[in-house]
Image 1 (spheres, rainbow, N blue to C red):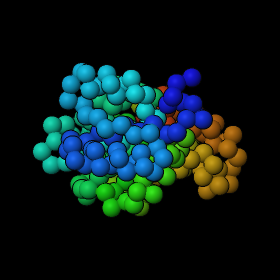
Image 2: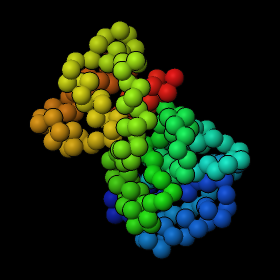
Image 3: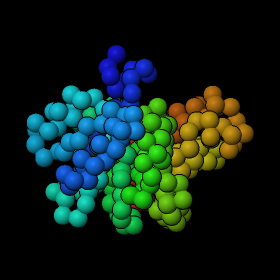
Image 4: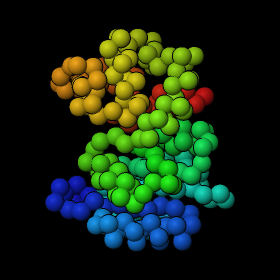
Length: 221
């Protein structure tokens, strides 16, 4: 079992940011908070190999002004180099486009720069344990207004999601976990998982992340 997957190991986090000062400061703060954090970038094959070797459970990405890669490009590279890692976007911008692009390319959540260190550490730990973490209010502003003209219930092959599958899909987009969906819809977790399997099959997705990304990608135009 790798360090990234061992339940007894501290959460391993790679901090990917274009600015060395931010990268170093966040990494030091996370290490002081009890996580195992490593600062890195994606500039070279050597950097990317080091990221893969570190085996992070979560990779936090941040692209400031003038960055060589966009948030979406960073996310795509991380998804390729460390496919088992969850991806958290640290953002200071209110622009919808970059966030939608990052989600379409595999991001699992995003969090504003104003977040406290304690909240950031908890978010990273939660992601490492496989749960979705998003700023739900902000994600709703990004996605919900665009759902109606682009109906995500229609699958890649023309099959239409059932009403319950559509409800489950919308809750997945909102970042809800299996237990949260179960409580929201008053159905068992096993039934939730069954509906999720139906959603994935109809959307041609291999994971919840892919299903959510496909909806966000279409909504973003």
